[in-house]
Amino acid sequence: MKYLVFEKIMSQPRMSRYITACSNDTRKAMTLYRLNLKLSQELFTIISCFEIALRNSIDNHYSSVHGNDWLRDSVNPGGIFDNNRCRKTGQIITRTLRKLNHNYTHSKLVAEMDFGFWRYLFSQPQFHSGGQSLLRIFPAKPTSTPTIQYNHRYVFNELEKINDIRNRIAHHEPVCFRLGNAVKDTTYAKQNYRLIKDLFSWMQIDESALLYGIDHVNQIISKVDVL
Image (cartoon, rainbow, N blue to C red):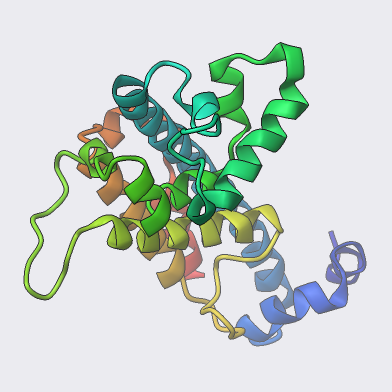
């Protein structure tokens, strides 16, 4: 496809960063755009697997601590999230329960919660209300040091990074540039990919086996880097 046709479809503002990053080489710009799509697809697959693993680990833990319907029960009077500090969390759960209505099952309720919901269970109010035991889903996390505390706040902040790149990809924003610049740079993608693999390891999940045949992130990153 000729570049002008490609640009007309994708829009000039969207392609401007690619053109700048490729020194006005239109062929390279189209190649970079396509590689960014592939990289986004690959990363989103990894993020999706991590999100499912995270929510299932949280669900299994809280089911053992608070009962099989812990999420529904959490907003009942006296439930773990029935307090002002966890009001927004409670509202999300209550709203979803109304949506499910008579079709409620615990599994359906869990599946309705997005990544941000699970991340916020490591926020101070939710972590405290849940019994301060949720870090047990990371049995292999590093030991805290005087300079780095691997506590719930640390996990909360690390999950924010993953949530950010997840949302970036979902909104069709590129991941092949230095953030805020029209400069080809895969550092952002590499950092988040490494972070996800680290958190898999903390959960004692063999990510290489889990992602066998579907993880091609490094291969795509290499193609972007040499373009």
